[in-house]
Image 1 (cartoon, rainbow, N blue to C red):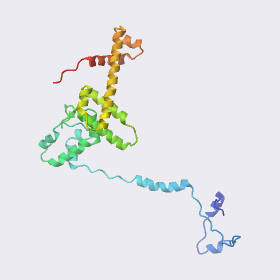
Image 2: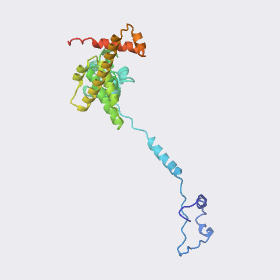
Image 3: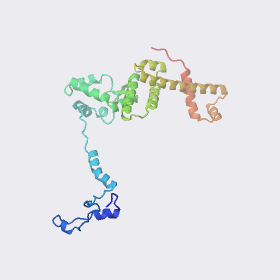
Image 4: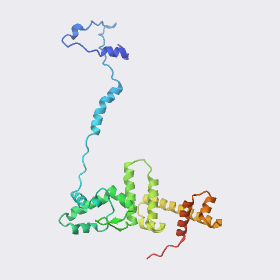
Length: 273
C-alpha cells in the first residue's frame, strides 16, 4: 500500500479482525517485497479532521461549563443589603456624606467600626456605584431621599476610573472619544463655566489633563457655533425664529433651543460668593 491510500483502501483496512487466537490462521500469506524485506503492515486509517475536532469538543465544553467560584460577599455588605435593600440592592445610588457615622449611630450592635469601613469602601469602589456617581445622580440618605448633589470633582473622578476599567477590559480599542464626550457632558451638567471646572478637577496627570483640555475645546467650539447662529439671526432682520429657520432649511425647534441657550451664555456670570 502506498502512503496515500484511497477511500476504498481505507475501508478495507478497517474491516474487523478475527479473534486473536485464530487471526494468524485466517490471514492470507503475504509475499515479500522485491528487495526481500517483509511487507509493510497495513496503515491505520486516517480519521477525518471533523471527527478529531468532535472528539476534542466535549473536553473543551466540559472546561467551559465548570462552575465559577462565587465571589464572597463581605458580611457587613450583606447586612447593609438586608437593612437597606433600596440603597444596597438592585440599584445603587450615591450615598450622602457622613453615612458611615449614621450607620454606626443607628445600628451600634450590627456593625463593627472597622468592618463597616471596609464594606462601605468596597461598595463605593464597585463599578455599579461609580456609574451612579458618574451619571450625576444626587446623594441619598439611608431612607432613599435625595439630599445633596455630587460634587463635580467626584463625578469627574468617577468618569476617569470607569474609563480606566473599560480600557483594561477592551485593550486596543480607542475609547478616548467616548471619554471626551462624557467629560464634556459633565462640564455642562456641573453648572460651572469651563475655566472654573478646569481649576477644580485638573490634576498632575498629563494624560487626563489633555483629555480635559480636549473636552473643554470641544465645548468652546460648540459655544462659538451657537453665538454665530445668534448673530446671524440678529443680522437677518427676521422677527420670527421660525421664519429664520425656514429661510436656512433648519429645524425650527432646534434653532429656538440653540438661540435661547446662546442668549443665556451671553449674560455675564454671577459674581462668586
